[in-house]
Every structure is written in structure tokens, then in C-alpha cells.
Image 1: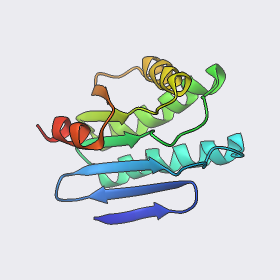
Image 2 (image 1 turned 90 degrees about the vertical axis):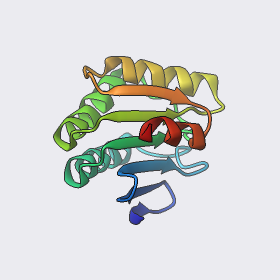
Image 3 (image 1 turned 135 degrees about the vertical axis):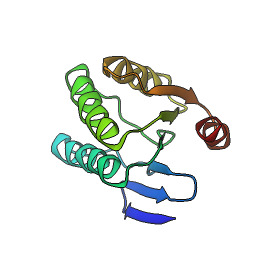
Image 4 (image 1 turned 30 degrees about the vertical axis):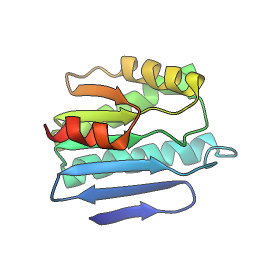
Length: 134
């Protein structure tokens, strides 16, 4: 497994064996994040999707404590879809948060994505990986 980024906000890794690019937001990482910093991370994820060309993308939102505002939801969706298309992603699994409002934000952001990439929401990492590689 190759660690692409690991800091106090997010851990991004790529597993060549399973062809999964995984993002894991860190606990409390969103408490004081500025919108420009968030945008920079989303662009970085999009670039990794395009560069590493994983078959699968696992977005672990469990610790994401911020609700994406409506005005940024479509921007995030557009950027991630751009990277996913360039990387030829086949499936995307999203691990939901414990927070209902964050989950609603995830669902709205995904609904903004204009893509045919298969995607599904999960509550566990194990089930998400099982679905991705099946």
C-alpha cells in the first residue's frame, strides 16, 4: 500500500493489489478547515484518481464533521468526477458518517455528479471493500 498523503486532515492511500484509492478524513479535521484548503484537498484527490488510475475509489466519510454547503456540493462533485473519468474508475463506495446531516450532504453531493460510475453507500469499510472488488 502506498501512502499518498497523511496529515492531521486526511489520509489518502493507494493499494495496487486491490486497485483501491482510499480517502479517510481524520477525526475533528473539519472543525476549522477553510474552504480554500478543502478545495485544495479535493483537487489533490481528483489528481490522484487521474494519476494512479485505480479501478475503485473508497471515500471514508465516517469522521467528516462538516456539511458541504449547497454552493460547494456541485463543485466537489464536478472535480471528483473529472478525476474519476480520467482515471477510468469503475466503482465508488462511500462510507457514511454517524451524522445524519453529513450523510444528507454526501447524498446531495453525489446526486450533483453527472456520471455513470457505479456508486453505493455503506456503514462499514469491510462491506464497502467487499462490494468494490466483487
